[in-house]
Amino acid sequence: MFRKTTKMSNGTSLPTHFLKKCVGLGVILSLVAILFGPPLQVALAAALLNKSDTLSSLKVSTLANHEVIFRTPTGVDAATDTITITFPSGWTMGSVAFGDMDLDVSTGGQTSCSGVSFGTAKTLAATAGTNIWGAAVSGQVITYTAPTNATTGEIATQACARIRIGTNAAGGTNRITNSAATGSHTIAVAGVFGDSGNIVVNLLTDDQVAVSGTVTETLSFSLGATSVAFGTLSSAAVTSATHTVALATNAVSGLVLTFSGSTLTSGANTITAMATAALSAVGTEQFGINAKDNATPNVGAECSGTPPIAAAATGYNTVDNFKFVSGETIISSTAGINNTSCTISYIANIAGATEAGSYTTTLTYTATATF
Image (cartoon, rainbow, N blue to C red; front, side, top):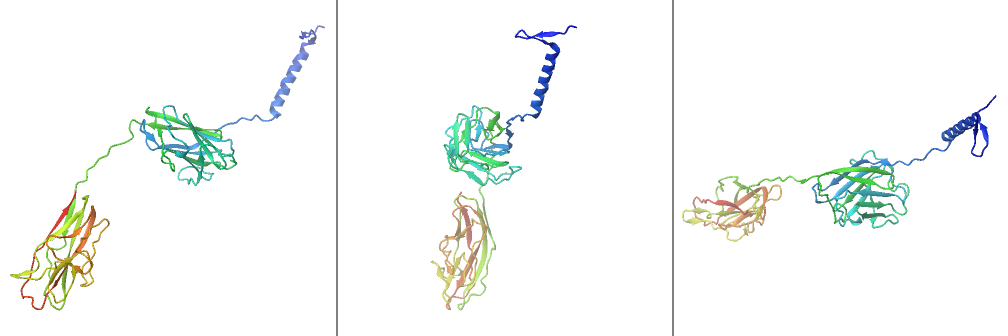
């Protein structure tokens, strides 16, 4: 009987069937080692969630603030952890540094970053230190380095992070200049903290819409009455009467309400007009007006409305003091006013020797606005 043999490299011959058994046993042992040996360790980065970058302007070649928000499934738990934000070529980082950035985080365990409170503000500096994050710009990359004493929970798992870059950061003065190219641009968020993701922003030739409208100059004025009646005048008591005026204007320099006319007159006889502001004096001829809420006599009201409103003018703005000088201003404002209601109060006193008669006058009120 002849058996097939295989010659080995050292010159020894072995039966071929013996070698096949050995090879088969080797394969089996290798499979056993794979099945029962230690598991393979494969490091996989988690995908960032709820990613966004809100720019203050999407116009090409324009300085803009950035507000980058994302949720990290892994968090930051070691001093060796970093977070990087990489801007595409064509974006100009300029003089942006740590003083132009904020890093705020939520408590962790969030399922969304919508409406979340970023209650923890991280301290930033050029380099990391105890309880201090490093924030440095190199080329197109901003790198945030965890504090030298960072440990579990520095940024909690499932926490939302908010990074502000530009004048929207506390004390920020520098901004990033958008690329000159319109269309989509990808901003990459990564680092060695374990998570990564891309944010796409779209730049436009112009992100503004010019909206225009015209507001015409306005002045409104009306009298609450076209006549007032004192009735019978007495030397023993003051007589009073009122009417209202309504005013409004958008004039930059406001308005004035003036009056003109004569004192109470009956033929050749008159009741003395009050040339200077004074109190009512019963038994003495007086004719005067003001625009105040008076106590003696109890007549009138303050100008009212939703501010800004008009007010009584000098000479007619002291409680219980009345005056009458034709051509003077009784109500005024120094800027535009909302609808204002003012009460003009009249008083008349006579002396025992005041001539009998029917005393009347007609006053003209003129509202003038300065636009």
